Amino acid sequence: MLYYPKFLLRLTFFAGLILCFTSVVAYGQSSGATPINFTLNVGAGEGGDVSVAIQLLFVMTILTLAPSIIILMTSFTRIVIVLGFVRNALGVQQAPSNQIIIGLALFLTFFLMGPLWGNIYSKAVVPYMDGSATSTQALDVGGSYLKSFMLKQTRSGDIEFFLGLAGMGPTDVEEVPFRVVVPAFILSELRTAFQMGFLIFIPFIVIDFIVASTLMAMGMMMMPPVIISLPFKLLLFVLVDGWYLVVRSLVQSFNL
Image (cartoon, rainbow, N blue to C red; front, top):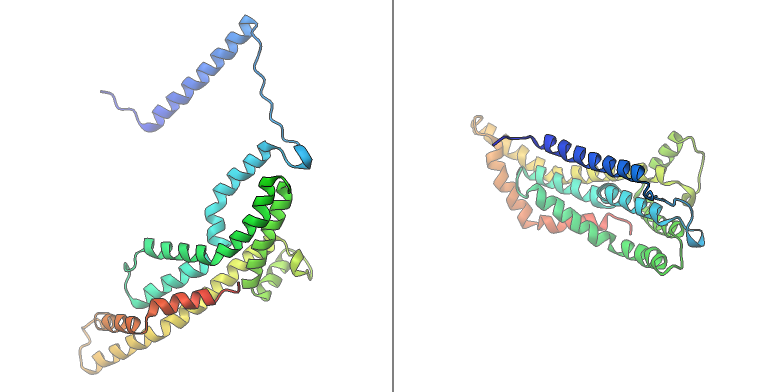
């Protein structure tokens, strides 16, 4: 039996489709059959709204960018970075695993963003589905809620920095465009997450320092300090209910 690579099979399949299509067109032209006309309307629809084709294209674009929107325009960035810092500070590289950290960060994001998404659905999606608002109006209302959330978490210095890069002067908060709000929000989230990670590292670094000094004083310089300090760090983290403190600090760090 002959073996064909996958790309050859796909190439043969598409070549066959093109051959069939050209054969049908040639037959229609030679026999005088009525040609098939395709019309794509990209103008305005009823009530001044964009056509269905443009709406479908926009929905497909949103679905493609949905992971980036969830990661960069919500609370997910700060949460997943801080949880990663907690794992690194403990010194355990695979417990909890990446899937657990990402899953916990995702569900915490759903918990924090739930009221905001509820407002967007009730004030933007429902009127659009009822026909009482156009797609442009629905996007403006939904975008205003999302921009308001990001502005509450963003430092004014970061907004001024990107306004300067964009060549814009002093601008009212309501008039700041998304192209300025989104990068300023991401920069603020990274800064806040690293500040929280630094505070998380401090008690575990103290334990590592004490263990390393003790082993050196006892002359056990060949003993890796990590082997001794890891149980003490886990014990400290369990005694103070570390996961509860971390999650509570993360939730309370957002201005909702």
